[in-house]
Length: 199
Image 1 (cartoon, helix red, strand yellow):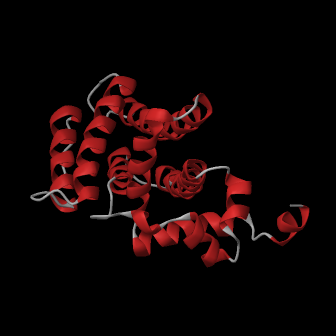
Image 2 (spheres, rainbow, N blue to C red):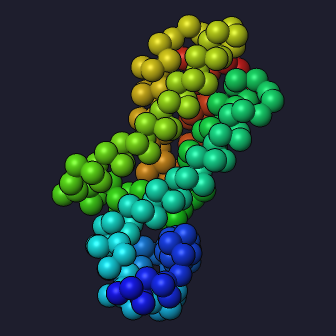
């Protein structure tokens, strides 16, 4: 196994390849054998590093979330009003469309979490927590500057994220009658009605 470790591609390359396979072929085509072929490793070597497909999927999600988190950080610290940055947050949150690879992966990890151990659940909670904390901070900023109606930022963030999750699932699975632009319109209306913002 020491020789296998030495010759293994970097972890990031494996995770990037997994995400690319999900985007191009769908999650059902992501097998350990197919991924191993893609990165020049046997499925046995992949299992040695990741222990199970569940762990591979969770690490791929964490890797993808790391990239999204960096992008979210750039969006939330750029110049502009709190409302403009809130729109950017929503835009980043909502899937690009049917079979969006990040959301496809999220849905699979959520589904598998019913049987996950405490460590996996804690790691998923950490991902959720980062989105929540950033949203709470943005709402608090907008309230303090008088851009948003005075609401409880933590409570409102929980409600808004539940709304975004529900709508995002509709977009990701391709539910008939829903598309990304419709969803963004619903969210804009919700924000206008509840935060007193107009766009």
